[in-house]
Structure formats: structure tokens, C-alpha cells
Length: 556
View 1 (cartoon, rainbow, N blue to C red):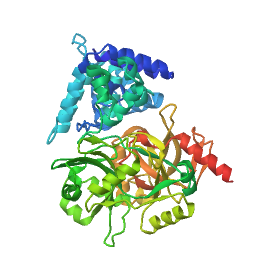
View 2: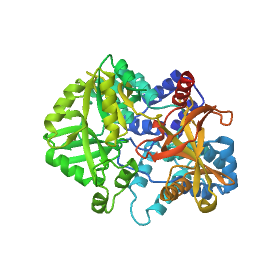
View 3: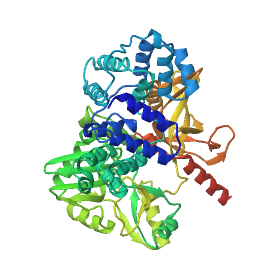
View 4: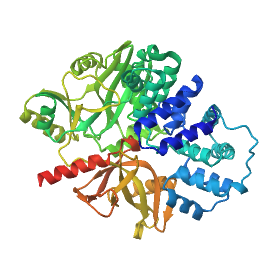
């Protein structure tokens, strides 16, 4: 399959809003592919070079791509800014610049067209480049790739490299396309994707082994599973009612959720985003190796940073540990961490995800040794639930989780089987899409940030507020460095950036506003913490913001 066929498919999908048509186009395309092409094609259609569970990383910034595009097209910064202002999309911007300078380019049109597998192999070679001089070698390799592209191919190569497909075609629709292409029940496809961690892996397996192969997909040690997610409950009474009169409450820790895999003597730790963070947490590895009484297991828990008094430290302190790949031993002394477990998904060759929650917890307690389990209370009484919540707050936690008795573990799904309850106005996870240079002592920093929520209908990020509050000077310096590598357009003192950085935002209320196209604005917004553990696709949606606004109106 030539890569241009995939680019043309993306273009067709981008121009339709009909979900069924998108699924039909994708399923027809998948049926035309060789088995070896299925997995890379699915990855690329979803805007990523490799599966989510892959350790391969391109580590190529937008700034690097911009330099390459300048060299290939001979365009200026002003022309790039004008193209982005016209399109609002980095891929389309690339295509405009390639198209406008087509005559000046040194393309060898007699070359063999780019093959889909060829693109995958080039990107893999880029990911493997490490050490001194790697950046320049990556640039040369990508420049060679883009020099063989026509404008449409260049548009989607750039989107795949940056991870910004924006066609409206996401994992859920791809699951439907795989189901239709290989005539496999959609529920089986979805379940397999949850355990495999990526629909691309499942698509490749479906092409090779069909339904029988997918039935064998389940939890496997050393392969991270998409975590089960919680919805928000207003209070203890709401949770008890939603769960049918009784609920299981647990402390909601202000830490980092981890999934720990053990197989024999090997232990690996994965973050909420399924990244391998094993090397950053050697004391947790040692604890699990020593105490977890299982030959093989997958457990879930929370890692929290603790102070000298034993109380939890803010989440930001924990980030210092997760970001560290060097001087880990020194940081382990400066920022000690503690593990608390709350779920067991796999034990000694058996999947436990379909067992009732209470049974999974009982099995977890039996193998945990001296490892702490989260504090827990099963109750049908609102007053006892409130006391439990107050106790959680007194010892430094941020609230409680409520879990429905008898519930299975549903990987990757946000549902009401799990609810989270916080005693303050629920913060929002938003994406920084723009920033302005500060004034006075902040004049050298990008310190005033545009905050956006995701429109579920279009996939675009819509601004709902702006803030300069919440970050320390060191965090602002680091944020400036990161944002400068994500800039796609400049307007005087303002820059617009790719939506990559997620932050947790507190606010006093949601208001209607004619100022932003979203129609919503946050009053007195301030950043409460950075959320590198969350991807932009996990950010709160405009629908969520509107729900909060509507509840305010009802209370008023």
C-alpha cells in the first residue's frame, strides 16, 4: 500500500462529519491491506507513529519540523504564520507551504512512491537515534522523508509526527471499523483493545487470527492495561443513591496512579498514561519484589510523596520523582514516596477483572504483605460517609472514591461504577493553547496562559479562560521553555501553541461569555497543578463545563 492512499483516506474522513461514513471508509481501507500493514496503518490513522504501549518515541518537536519545512519550501516565518492563521491546523499549514513552493523544491518525482511500511520503518529509525548528534541525524532523516512527499502526503506525515490528526476519527470509531472489516463482534474488539492497550495491536491480531485470537486477549504481565476511570459525584448522598443504596468509600490520594506488574523477579511500574516509570521508583520496585506474595500479578495503586511528618506532600512534589532519570537515589532521599494499593487485576495466570470488586480486594489483601491498602469503608449511611470524607481531608488527602459493590473492572471506561468526591468546587483539567509574555519581572517569560476545553463534537480545543496565577517562578520558566517548542503562530506578545500541556485549574464559577466562541468563561481561574500524567484527549470537555454551569444556575 502506498502512503498516499492513507493520506487520501484521512482527507476524506476529515471532510465528513458522519460517523457511519467514517467507519465505512476506514473498514474498506483495512480490508485492502496486507497483514503487516494493519497495525502501522491504524496507528497512523489515529495520528501516532507507534502503538500507545510502545517504548519507541520520536522526540521530534514542532520547532525542529518548522526548520525542516523552511529549508524544503524556502518559506519565511511570516508566510508560516499567515498559513496557520488561515488554516488553524499545522498539517494544513505544511501542505499550503509545500504547495506554494512546489516549483522551487528539489523533489525527484521519478522516485518510487512512498510505501506505508517504508514510512513506518523510517520513523522507527528516527526513534532509535540516541546520544550525541541524534537531533541533527533525526532532522536529516525526516527532511529526506518530507522531500519525497507531495503536499497532501507532507500534511499527514507532519500530523503523525506531532500527534495532531484532528480528523474526528478516534479510537471508538476505529474499534467499529475493525469490527466491520474483520467481521468480529464489536464488544469483543473493545474488550481486547482495553487489555492490549491499543486498538492498533488488536487490529493486527484480528487480521491474523480473527475472533478466536481476540478471545484470548486478556491481562498479561508487562503489558499495561488502560485504567478504569471515574465520574464525578456531587456528594456522599449522590454516590450512595447512584450505587443503589450502598457504596464502598476509599481515600482519594493526591498522588500518581500506578499499575504495577510482577512476573517472577521482574517488576515494572506504569503510569496512568501507560508510560514505564520503573527506573524512577526503585524503592517501590524493591518493596513489591520483597512483599507481594505472587509469582505473577498486576496490581493498581497510588504513589504519594510524603513529608518528614508522614503527611502527603502536594502532587507537584511527586512530579520531581517521575521526571527523574538521573540522580534517582538522591531524589529518593529528598522526596520519599509511599505506595498504597487498591485493586488486583491479575494473579498467577488468572484474570480477575470480571470478579466483583470486594473479591478482588480480598485477594489483594491476601497477597499484599506489608504493603498498605487504601483506607476503606462500606456504608449505606450518609452521615458515616461524611465522617469518612472529613477524616480523609484531615490526614491530607483530596477526597474519597466511591465504588459500587459487586462491580467488575472495566479498563479504559469512565463510568458510574467508580465515582470521585471532593469537598470543593471540582477543578477542571484544561489544555494550554496559547500564552502571552509577561510584564515587569516576568517580561522574559510566557506567564499568562489561555486555557481550553475539548469540544467533543469537533475535537478542537476551545478557550474558556485565561490566567497568570498558580505557578512558581521555576515552573513558569520551565513552562516557557516547553511552550516555545510548541509555538505554531505569533501575534505580537501572544503565541498560539499546539495543545499538548494539561493543567488542573481551580475557579470561582463558570459564566456565560460573549468573549470566547465557546460561550463559556471561568471566573478567577488559577492553575493548581500540572498534569503530565494526563494527555490532552483526557482533558475536560465543553460538555462538562456546561454541566457545571447548569448546576450553578439550578442552585442559584
